[in-house]
Structure formats: structure tokens, C-alpha cells
Image (cartoon, rainbow, N blue to C red; front, side):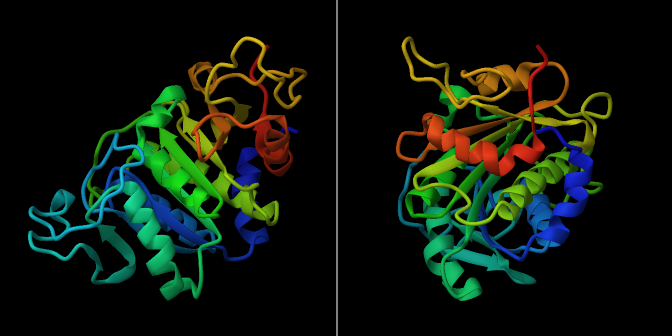
Length: 300
């Protein structure tokens, strides 16, 4: 089941066909993470449209209200006061803001922008990668998770990515920090692996919650050092049904445990869009099969 992550990153874009991806977050359309991930996904051969909040909407969960005219500038002065409820980058109309919440933003991307750019709905929704991890019950208030689960409820397979390292940063910062490129590389690898597994990418009402541990020049400095581990969002309750069998166990580790384990381990949890909680063993098995080539086990 284990394979070289470096090899996977290098080869997968060559093996997959262009996929129509809607990209969103809760940190805002002008935050560095989402812009770098847009570039990575595009360079991997995908057709990507970004539709994200005009301002930082972290921690807003599944809030959803109609977009309104800007009464203050977009984050990092990326658009002026008085701008319309929705807008785009003049030099790249695939970069769009929505002056509302992440759920509102990704729905606008799916229902309005995707027909314009893709001729129909997107094939995949990606949210993030978020500034800070979204582990366990934090998924209930995360706007990035809110965007991913909203897409899944609209029938679009979705992945939420989050990284432990970093802070709110403007898209203009150069050079791009090491951790940003590392997380973008990892996110693209998971996305490309899922795409290469074939359609349907995920079963109905299912989303993936992927979290990366801290990354710095001293530790976990590049994607080649990371290993992905299939995990649970929450601790299993007393008497809970078994999880899918993997790594010799029928109980998956929690994503908190995975990310907290020394050795650059990233968690991949399989969630229900309607509850933001864990799925059963059958749905976990689908993801285990699709992502098996990049999944590993925690040290015993």
C-alpha cells in the first residue's frame, strides 16, 4: 500500500486528464494559500475556477447569506469599497470573489461560474488549503469545511485541505514561503490521486478532510517527507461499529492523533456532508481503495 510520494507527485499529472475543479476557502480570495493552490492545480493540467469570500470568513461554518455590495475594501485591498457583490480579477476572470460566506461563495461558483467556464457543473470541489488545521469538532465551525460539505450536498465530490503552519498572508508575498509550496504540493497530490482513481470520485454525501502537520525548513520541509494516513474525524464512541480494516486494525486513528504523531504524517478522514461527522466502513473502504497508493500506517 505504501509508495513513494515523490514519485506520485511527479507522475500523476501526466496520467490524469484535465478535470474541472471549483476552488474555495474561508480565508478569502486574496489569501496566499488559495492562490498558490490554484496555480499548482492548474499546472497539474486541471481547469480551475476560484470562487471564494471577498474577506476572511474563518470560523463561519455553514453560514449562508446573499452577497452584498462591498462597504469596505476586499481583504488586502484586493478590491475597493463599493465593488459589486461578486467580482473577478481583471487579468484573470477565473479568480472570483463573493462578498459573503464560504458556502455562498462555492455555491455561486458551482451554479453560476461553472456553467460559464466548464459548460456545466464542476467535476470536483476543493476547499483550502486552510490557514490552520481543522481537526475533530473544529470541522463543525470551519468555513473551509462548510464550503466542502456544501459542494458535496450539491452532488459535487469535495475535499477540504488544511495546514497547521502559517497565518493570514496576502497573495502578493514573494518569495512564496516554503510551507505554502509544500502544502500546495501535497494537496495537488491527493487531488490528482483521487482523479486518477476514476469516477465516481467519491460516493454521494461524502467529503474528505485532509490535514497537514507543521512544516518548516527544519522539519517536514517538502512533500517528499510526508506520509498520508487514513483516519477518523472524531473518536469512535463506545460500541461503535468497526472501521474499515487497514494497517492490521479495524479502528482508524483520529486525525488529531495522526497529525500529532512525529514524522510528518497527514490525516485523510472520510466524512458525511450532512453531519460533518464520520462515515461507516463501506464508505471508508472506497477511499482506501482509491487513495491506497499514497496511504501509509502510523508507526506501531
